[in-house]
Amino acid sequence: MVSDGDDNYSRAEEPDAIKMCQRAETSVYTISTNVSPSKDKGDEVLRRLSVATGGRAFYPTKIEDVAVGFRSIEEELRSQYLLQYRPAEFKQDGSFRTIYLFSLDQRFKVRTRQGYFAPRPPQ
Image (cartoon, rainbow, N blue to C red; front, side, top):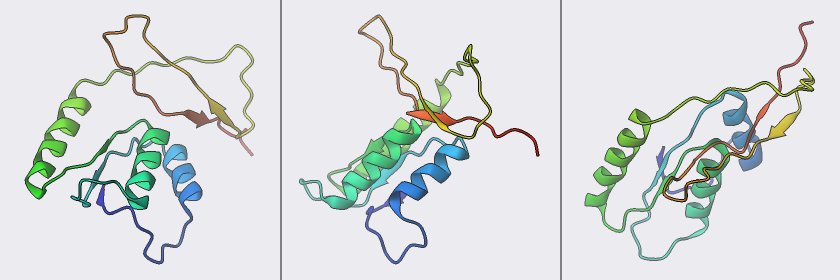
């Protein structure tokens, strides 16, 4: 998503937008259009959206650096891994489950979404 991160009469509040992305199991990568040297409120919104969904936020300091953000996103998407597990006490209750994943080797950076929504039981 390329944006300034500012809310311009949206139909959903930020927490709801994050939940929708998490339910859709979507990683959101953001590129800020704010090219000033200081981050503003919109940049923080972009960061929160990216972190919550397992993506990453990019803050170019000049418009030419936007392409660097796209190349970095492309590189990350080509080097992703899928890790799947099922909790021992798996409950289909639709609740949000927080997850923590890290590497014992400090040379590696693990980026994951903050959690997932458990499925609801079939009706």
